Length: 334
Image 1: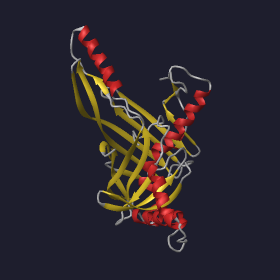
Image 2 (image 1 turned 120 degrees about the vertical axis):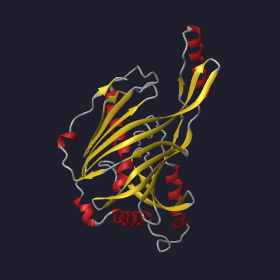
Image 3 (image 1 turned 135 degrees about the vertical axis):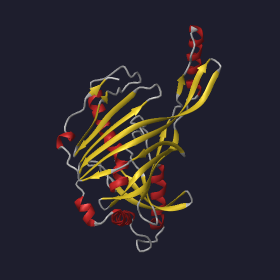
Image 4 (image 1 turned 180 degrees about the vertical axis):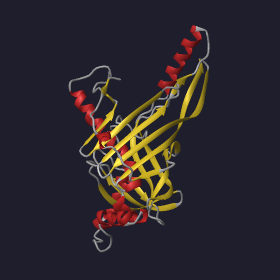
């Protein structure tokens, strides 16, 4: 979301929370309690969203919102296994810094650029653009439909463009939902109230969001302020621990044995797909142009901090060149 959240390779992405919470919310209706006993979940969700929008800002502030620009600092907490010799390994953690810029020309144009660094010191960046019905990423890696990623079919080009378009909207969605309580354009969603969820000893109003391609996050609203508190996504994925070789030696044999140890470590740490929980928590709400917007987003994966997004300033209603949202995918072979 992350710059980084769940990748397109998580083909089994699903929100188990959505299934269980919606089922729990609708159970009284199935047991004959009738609509008088419990409000319709969709209507209740819309009521809460209306109240949440009012908590964020007045109708006048919302009506005046035409554009949004922000520059954010990214702090990624990366945990990895350092292989320093044939018989020496160490668990490490490193903080990598990055940047993110978002420009939005409301209601239907968004542009996002992410720049990050890697453990080996190299940097990378990409942009994602949503312009009404169109969306794309640049550069857009060409994705193979084969196990051997070096083999491509004719249809892989069209498939890659479609996947990156969906990813652009899906990765923007947590931000647009947390700030504006709305999904990106051309990203159809349904909102279902799922009762109260407990987190950190408090209970939060919970709205499950049903989106395309198994995008089913849950939006938690603070019970006191009704401001967005968190977005939770459950998914199934075979996560792999990062194993990195950090060896200093002039001995070719020592280096070869170190790399062999790293291969064994990677093989031994492979796991079957498991259920994971991704949380994006919104905090440090400050008033900007009459709207209370969160200036910090903390991302946790299975309870561990993996990313912090700090936004020093939101700039509202600035002039943005519409040409920024024009273009097309630039396909690149990996």
